Image 1 (cartoon, rainbow, N blue to C red):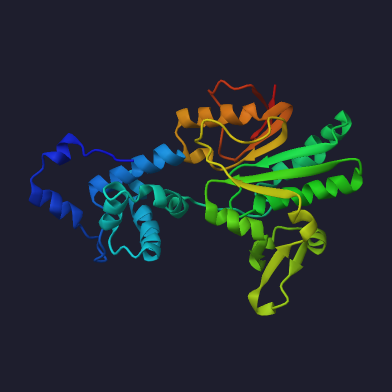
Image 2 (image 1 turned 180 degrees about the horizontal axis):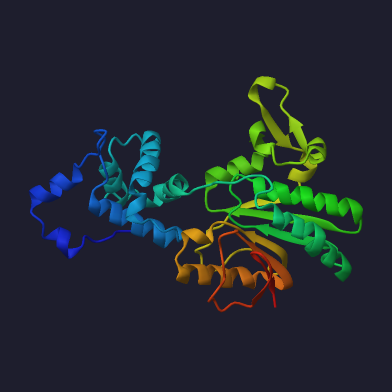
Length: 301
């Protein structure tokens, strides 16, 4: 992908453009030129839907510096020349997106959603006679959300032996998917997990110094993992999902992108199925086949 220079930058004197390329921050580190920041922001938005306003420039520079150490490229603007002028983009795009995505997650994050599952959504599915509960954890990050779902669903199916479940876990970042597949987490992350659930579904490392836990094999076997970009025109996902969790990712998209993504998610949600969004996300003003039935919980009409 080649982005053209704006007319304004193209007409600037060569010395001025060169000075812009060699700009440094207050710590003496090279900064992204204005032109390169704009090109990166456009690329990231077009590829992933993630907004990259000027306020995120310092964050982007920090993320890219960590990525540069892996590539052996010495400067931020040299990195940009590599991807934009030297045909390095096709090999680098996945790593670039991995570097800039934010992967904040916790077990039992936003607890009312899991209370709603236990008290309302799952009992309703039992009443319909549905034998296989199909769940999609979109933007699953390192796996805390889908493994939390697995604990809740396993508890439900223990009491309802005729039911079973499967969870599809997807994310844009290959790095977080690799970590999610392992099912290994720092011990500090499991604080929100009830003691009884810890006993049943978590194994502690034999090496106490590592202070890690791993999800038991029985739960890991219920999860399947795949890389999916929510900006794609279509998703290789079944169209009869009972539950879709897509939480705290829409906030990074503009309104038009939010609508397109939500429309595609609805295409994979069966009538009566539930969509869960993040606590600060809304479908207000969007034309979607959804009705709100709880705080940031929506049902497909």
